[in-house]
Image (cartoon, rainbow, N blue to C red):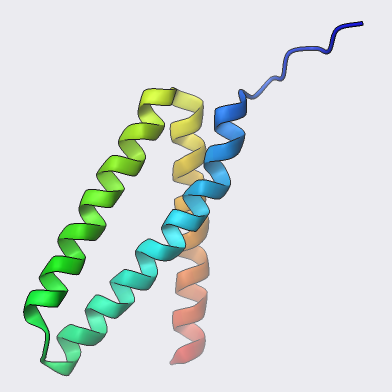
Length: 94
């Protein structure tokens, strides 16, 4: 007896939680960058964090794109979920 082929490839299933985890780290660093800039100190650290975040996003989404369209979409959905979580946390803090 053989199992039917999955309708969603396995890399796509793995990329959704990876996108969520990456997104949570991404937005945590964005928050840290904002704190540094508002405090008026650590301009170089803020620039480094920003460039690091953007570079990591390019690498992460680029590797998802190399795996195919479905993993890229799943990674992006994970990032969108992380954004929703980050916004909810930010709204509660205000």
